[in-house]
Each structure stands twice: as C-alpha cells, then as structure tokens.
Amino acid sequence: MNKIDIYIGKTVIAGILIVLLVLVGLFTFFGFIDEIDDIGKQRYGLWEAIQYVALEVPRHIYDLFPSAALLGSLLGLGMLANNSELTVMRAAGVSIVRIALSVLLGGLVLTLVAMLIGETIAPRSEQYANSMRSLAQSEHENRQMVFSSRYGFWARDGNDFINIRTIFPDGSFGSIALYEFDAAQHLRALTYARTAYYQDGQWLLKDVEKTLIEATKVTRQFLESTTWNAVLNPELVKIVVVRPHKLSSLGLHKYIQYLRQNGQRTTQYELAFWTRLSYPLVGATMIFLAIPFVFGSLRSVSVGQRIFVGALLGVGFHMLNQTTGNIGLVYGINPAISAFLPPILFLAMAVALMRRAIY
Image (cartoon, rainbow, N blue to C red; front, top):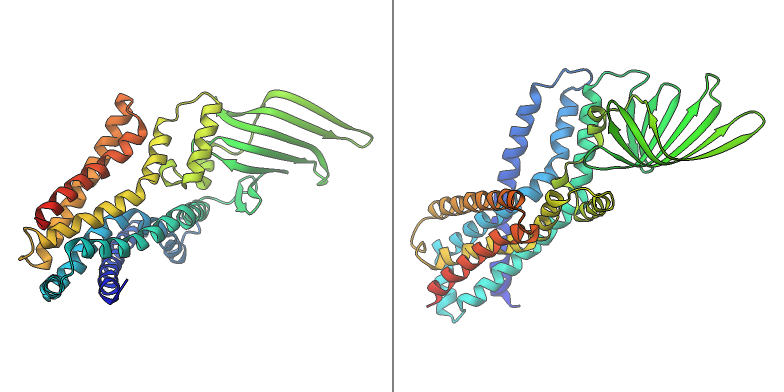
C-alpha cells in the first residue's frame, strides 16, 4: 500500500467519522429531549438523564454506522472529486478499481470497529442504562430492590433474597437461587431452579432442588416443578432485559438454542441473529455504493447533492430491509435469506453502476 492508498483511506475514514459524529450527536440530543419529561420522577434527575443518553451512544454508533458509511464515503470522495484530486490520480494511471479497493479497505476497518462495539459494549451499556433509569424512576420499598453484579441479578423480597444468573428476552429466568431467611436473619431454606416462567400471576419453577435447614437436620427435596409467589413480576423484570434485536450475536445464539430446547418458535430471533451476521456485508455495500456515484453520472454535481442522493439510498435500503424482514416472518421465509437479500440486491446495483462508471 502506497501513499495514494493511505491518503484515500484516511479521507474516506475522516468523512465517515464526521457523518457518524453528526448523526450520533443528533440522536443523542433528541434522546435527551425525550428524557426531559421524565426528569423529576422519584430520584431520576438531570444527572441520571445525562447518564442514560450517554450510555445509549454505543447503540447509536452501531445502528447508525451503515448510513454514516454511505454518506461519509460520498462526502470523502466528493471532496476529492471537487478538488480534482481524483482526476489527477486517474491521469497518473490509478485505476478506478484500485481507488475502490482503497475506499473499501478504509471503510472496512471502521466496520469492524462498529461491529466490536455492537457485540460487546452496546448490549451491556444499554442493559445498565435501562436498569439505572427504571430503578431511579421506581419507588424504593423494602420489598422491591433489584440490582446487577458480576454474579448475576439480585432482588430482595422481604427477608428473602433472589439470585438470577440468566434473564431471557421474554422475561423468563434461568439458574435461579432463592435464599429464605427468618426474622432473626437465619437461613432456613435454599431453593435452586433451572428455569422460571411467569404464568397466571405467579412464577412456575422447573427442575427444582430445595434444601430445608432446621436446627437439628437438613432436608433436600427434588421437584419437577413448583409455584413461587414473589414480588418480581414482568414489569419489574423489564429493567434488566435487553430486547432481542439488541442482544449480541452470541446472546441471540444461546437464546435460540434455549427456545428450541423448550419447543418454542425462534423465527424472529433467528432473523435478528442473521441480520447481525450480515452487518459486515451491509457496511461494505454502503461504502461500495458510494464509489460509482462519484465517478458516474453524479461526478459533476456538488457534495451536497451527492449526500442527498446517498440519504435517499440509505432510506430506501432501510425500508427494503424492514419490509423483507417482516414479509419473511409472515410467510415463513428462511431468516438468512430475509437478512442477506437487501444488502445483496444493493451490492448487485452497486456493481452494475460500477461497471457503467468504468466502461
């Protein structure tokens, strides 16, 4: 890679980062405006609102990157075109294909960074943000305390304490431990359940192991299922649940396996999973789509006009992506096809436009 490749890559990366900063800033600002109405509810003040919108930033980066990739690439290449730098490069013997590869290489670096943020930072920060926001806006009572730690989620129900290692997107639990104490704070029972479901106003525990602790003996019981009346309800559980499409790929995969083992439908979660796997292709397609518009029919127009066209393409891709996903869910189309079809169609369009620009 020589100086020309590095220069093109840096220009495109700068353009994408500028657009991404603007988009994330706008979404963060509007998110803060939405939170203003909730300021003053219980302990939810200005500082908590600022924390909440700040913790949402990684999610905005991941969600907005494909649009920023298209608009930023158009911006970067448009600046090179308006300064006649692309003309000089072409006159020096640099082919359009080589310029395209340089653009793609720079864009793919940012795509990988956005993927890393979306798979690691975004799910955790959003989960913490929702938990912090809900707890600050709820009434604090002795019977309703929920918090998270490295050892899972903990809740207090009177003198009893509950540890939940896994909370699934539908609000059900996995790996639950119940610690029951008497008035003197002596442990009198320990219950472990593999899973728990909320049915008819109470929790149904499955695969239960219960240990009763008395002064003179310890008794262990094994139950296939039992009911559990607790302060926890689906509304309270929502504070620690991340919606399916915002889980990481690994989290979605685990949850899909869990649903299959319990004989439940997995289609919408498989669609979310395959949509995440298609993210690199979406990013590459958006970047590649910008190239023929600079060398093709829009090479003589202003940067603003190119960005307008890019915005229309971005909206069109989003609408096609949403429509294809919904149609796939309704008509039972393979989720992988529903997820990969829109970027493949737009990539084919970009290749066709690229061929016209070259020939």
